[in-house]
Image (cartoon, rainbow, N blue to C red; front, side, top):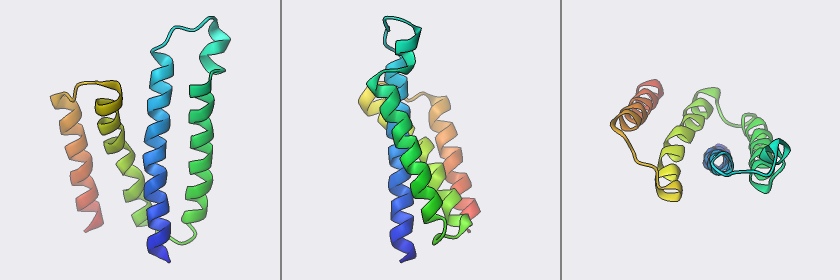
Length: 112
C-alpha cells in the first residue's frame, strides 16, 4: 500500500515540474495586457496542477513516512531540468548539472 502512495507522490513531483514548465512558457510570451499575464490557460492550468498535487501529497503523506516523502519531492528539480531541456530547448549548463548532481547526492546521503 505504501508503495502505491509513493508512486502517487512521484507522479505528483513530475506534474509539479510540468506546471513549472507551463509557467515558464507563459512568462516567455507577450501578452495583450498585464491581466492576461495571469489569466491565460497556461497559468491557470499550472496552478490547478499545483493545487491537485498539493491535495494528492497531503493525502499520500498519511501513508508515506516523511523521510521518503521529502526525498520524492526533491526530484521535482531533476524533472524541471530534463523537461526544460527537451520541451523548451534550454541548455544544460555546468552549473545546472552540478546543482542537480548535488541534489541527487543529497538524496542518496539522506536516504542512507
